[in-house]
Image (cartoon, rainbow, N blue to C red; front, side):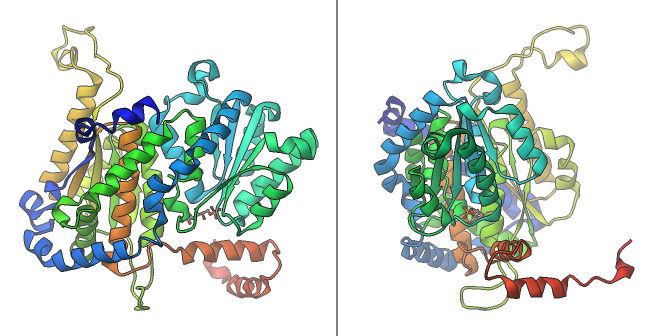
Length: 480
Ligand code: PA5
């Protein structure tokens, strides 16, 4: 264990670093007629109990929940590979999409310098990090304009080993690497993260003797940040991955308490489900008040949308489920979206992420003391200002009658980020159980993947191609 991980084993520090949930403003007592009532919460108790039990019974299918216990066995090999990358590379490029990209982006943004790539390896000790989660040809070309293959290591991440976007990127990169370094040289520039036996990447990795990390069974893409999918990029960036796992374990303990009122993920899930079912909250806004947490919203949006957006229950009952996640950033979006959150329709919940202690403090100096309307800011800190603006926005949203809640993070660090990841994963799992749906599949995404295979001529997709051709017949009059 590193020194920091040891520090977080102290119970007082764990308590002080505990992520907290304040849901007062979800209730009708705070927001009035559009809020969740205490009676609704009381009536929901048997459902919460059942959801808690069924989530526990599925623990075998939810291996992502145990990663903090299983991953320590592979942490050493991850750190070894990360040390190799940190030593040899100026650039580390992740090739992946969806669950194979959003976690790495969120964790790097949260725990690294906000200008990590501009700071230089001498100061960060780490290569520049790029997560290429799109196949826009201009973006791919632009990447090769700023990296040099000689000092670049790629990490291709795909659980299925078949995603068209990632495989296309891999083909482009492999061709370039083989042309430059030959078959023997590939190992020093390409690391694979994939399923242990399924998919095309397994064979490719074996053929070229690549360093390979496994996405464990029972760990779906959007639940995979705490396995090598996220841990390797994080370790390359210098993140203390043991403490990240430790934080997740701490939150799992908190979410293993059967009493709903003491279990943060169960409370959050229950409130969101009540808001959706009984209060028309079709939209869920996540609004962190910290640039470091900006991409947590992207990660969460995928988790929440792909897990809950379903058209049937596990028993086959056809019904539409889900809540549209909206990504927002405090204070930036106060000047863009908050007008809608206060005066717009009662179709949403807003979850604020508040940071209690920022890792740096900036005092606003005196310069215009003769202008009282500006001078009042002098002497305060930006820390006070951003916190005041969060509290003020929570107030404005509450008095306008809109449901909102706040997740309070004592400080953004590995331990609290691990908690946050686990909190939202558990909230999603409990919400899936409450709704009676399968939160772990993604048939809609698979449909799109299959249609792409058909359009590009992948063997075995003739029927899908015929289906696409017949539905592609468009009426001229509707094209202008
Ligand atoms: O959550 C999921 O399962 C998906 O979003 C996947 O992460 C995404 O489609 C990428 O899949 P893969 O890792 O198999 O390339």
